[in-house]
Amino acid sequence: MDFMAPIHIALIWVPIFQGATGVTFTLINKCDYTVWPGILANAGSSGLDSTGFELQPGGSRNLQVEPNWSGRFWGRTGCNFDPNTQQGSCTTGDCGSSQVQCNGGGASPPATLAEFTIGSGTQDFYDVSLVDGYNLPIMVDPTGGSGTCGPTGCLVDLNQRCPDELRAEERAACKSACEAFERPEYCCSGAYASPATCKPSVYSQMFKSACPKSYSYAYDDATSTFTCTGADYTITFCPSTTSQKSARDSAAPPPPSGIGSETGTGEIPLIVNSPWFTNFFNGHSSKSHSCSFSFIATLTMLIFLSLQYS
Image (cartoon, rainbow, N blue to C red; front, side, top):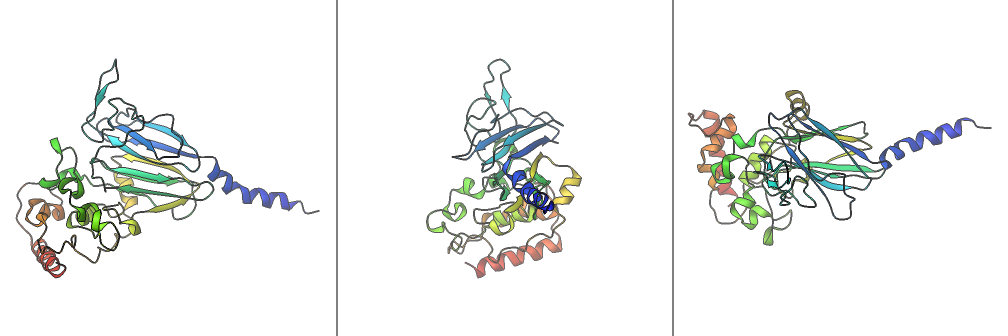
């Protein structure tokens, strides 16, 4: 009699059961200010035990989701809720519920999003997206899974580097070019609603250079979607230096072949004339600085390529 057969069967089923019992999300706030996480489950996914809550600096909270769940997490900032009625609103990431709980409402852009599709004994898919703009740094770290399971996130404070034409009110967030200009070539809509026609804009490329693992525009899948099987996930707002290093261990992806949206107008994008363009490469806020040789070379190349692809 083969006594080892039951053991072999048990070992085979262990990873399957790990992936079929659900996933634990741990949300951690390392910001020096309060964050109110918002959670939205996609259609067909079961709701969590909370759709929004307050997370003080240094605080954390665990949430359980069932297999085959999909949805998104984000951080709301600058919130003011009445302690008695719990009524109020947030400066960024507001979900329109007028309550701490989002109750099925999504994030009002601009907002940094952490998006997940959880499998059932199969791969999970996850990403951090700037397609709807940016409001605070977010890091996603998988633990205990198998597969590639890489960390991802946007770790740079883009609010300090945001060009004036993308700045939200109170300088608390940075809009996407789609929201700021409402043009189809930035929104990947209309005649630009396919990977073949919607190219990365100068704005999305700037976001991508700062946050190389995050979605910078709608068809940025190749360098922005991550997979893991049987993992739990930690979502950190304002991650620490150690976490930032782990997310940068892999080399940044090469820039897309096209520069700017191919509108056919021959216009050089507005950002070339923005002081943020210089500051972005130098890592400074929008104060005046002298142009370096590297910046002049970069600017010259950008103008040349813009004319080439116009």
